[in-house]
Image 1: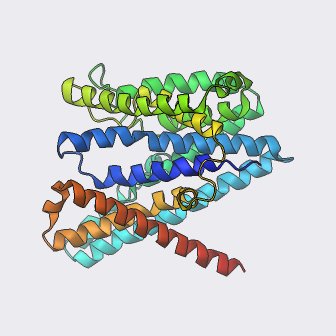
Image 2: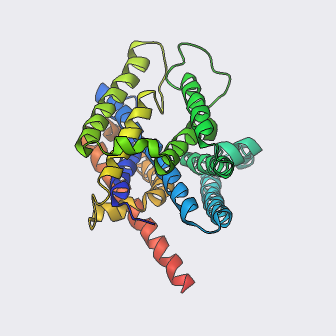
Image 3: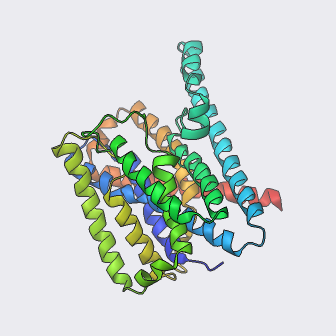
Length: 339
C-alpha cells in the first residue's frame, strides 16, 4: 500500500492540537476559547485517516475478513490494556489518599457499566479512550457495509446522524437532546471514518483531486477560522453550549484530507512526520502525564500559572514531548520482547 506521508505530517499538528485542547483552560480569556474551537479538527481527521487506510487495506488484501478481524482485535486489546492501566492508576490514587477508601472505590466502580465500558469508553480518568471504542464500533459497521457494497447508503445515513448529533453539542438551543453524549461512534466517529472510506473508494472525488492543492489548504485554513467563529457564536453569543464538533468541521476535515491526498509526499523524511505516525500513542498516554503533573503543580500551589498563555504553551510542549518519548520507549520495549 502506498505510503502517504502528508497524513502523518498533518497528524503531528492534529495530535498537538489535542494536547493543547486538554492543557489550555476553557474558562480562560476569549483567546483560549477560540484556540479550543479552532483545534477541533484533530479527532475528525484521525477518524477519517483510520477509515481511509482501512478501506485501502480491504481493497488490497486477498482475505479482507482476516485483516478486519486482526485489526479490530488489535484495537480491542489496545483499549482494554489502557483501560486497565487507567483503572489501576485511579485506584492507586484513592489508596494513597487513604480517606474514605471503601466509599470512594464503590462510587468509582459504579461508573463501570456495560454501556460506559463497551460503547462510550468512559469510567476512568482516561476519558480520551472513548476514541478507541468509537473507532472499534465504526470499523465493525464499515466492514458490514463494505461487504454488502452499500457505502453510499452508509455515507448519507452517517451524515444524517452526525448532523443530528450536533443537537447534543453546541446546538442545544434548539432542542434538549435525549442522549447524554453524542461524542461516540454513532453520531461522531461513524461519519468521519465513512468519509475517509469514501475518499479511498469513490471515484466521484477524482475531479476534486485535480484541483490545486493550495486551494484545499486555503479552504482548510478558512474552515479553521469558520469553525472557531461557529463555536464562539453558538456558545458565547447564542444560548448554545460548548461543542466538540460543529457543522463546519465536516467541510474543514474534507478540505484538509483532500490537501493531504494532493501532496502525498509532504513531510517525507521530516521528524515531525515520524512523530505524527505515533499520534495514537501520544493520544492515549498524554492524559496520564497531564493528570500527574497537574497534581504536582497543585501541591506546589502554582495553579495560577494556568492563566498565563506562555506557560500553557510551554506546558503543552512539555506534555506532548514527554508523552511521545515515553510511548516510543514502550514501543522499543515491545519490539525487544518480540525479538
